[in-house]
Image (cartoon, rainbow, N blue to C red; front, side):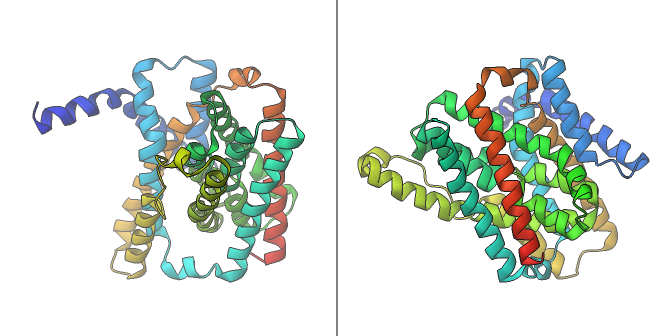
Amino acid sequence: MNVTSSTRASVRPLLPGVVVALLVAMVGYVVHRQVSVVSPHVVAVAIGIMGATFGRIEEVFKPGLRFCARRVLRAGIVLLGFRLSLGELGALGPKALGAVVVVVVATFFGTQWLARRLGLTRSLGLLMATGYSICGASAIAAVEPFAGASEEEVAYSIALVTLCGTLAIFLLPGFGSVLGLSATEYGAWVGASVHDVGQVVAAASSRGETALKLATLVKLTRVALLAPLLAGVAIAARRRQGEDALAGAKRPPLLPLFIVLFLVASAISSTGVLSVAFLRHVKDAETILLGMGLVGLGSNVDLRKLRAVGGRPLALALCSWALVALVSLGAVKLSGL
């Protein structure tokens, strides 16, 4: 089999799901163009959830939808970098960085304390703590080699963190209005409290460009803390289990590739060489790619399956969600973001 045939064979299973995600993302895009206050990202993730919960997503669509939730979503985030300059990235300053560190540390250790109080396993507490404090399902996947968790615990953790992050898309805009948060404060709060990068984009976009930019910056700062956090987890796990038990564990990169590319895009944008017309097209492509990713993300959330999770893990998920929301809100207010 030559390279071309091999590529076709690997791409073909993805096409049905990718096409569906593209069509749904286009629906969100058109709805937003007609009704500007409706976020295309919220439309995309809502349709994905409805498909998983009330419809039946055939197996033929699932590989493509998973691909969108992982790869396509991150490609959209890279394009989002063209809307930000390095000057804006540096404008966060040490106070904002300190606030993000406080949120991550408080959520990480607070969630594990809650898990112990609820009588849950150390491994489940570690998975949930990492997911809620850093970046949702991707952080859970990264810490899993060091957690000693069962497949069921990993699945529960991903399902619960995805559920709470998805609920945040719909609930945080209302809470932000009730609390009287400015667009800047709201964006910082979303970036500091919502779990997945795509969910941050969807939740923040409801309050406009200013909120979206700051939310993305704060969120990516949290994601960058994944490497030092995992280093600490690995050291603790080695001490507990011995070096040999973790010798084959895969070590994460210092920064995920999509963050590096995001920074490269921001650097290019900072030079001013890109035309307004080009950036407009990039923004449209970014909206579609993020929408496709969020369709895939939403298609993993079947609300009917919550009953199988059990009361105590669900209680941990909701308490941890409340913890990160409250700590991040306090950090935003105290840091003056």
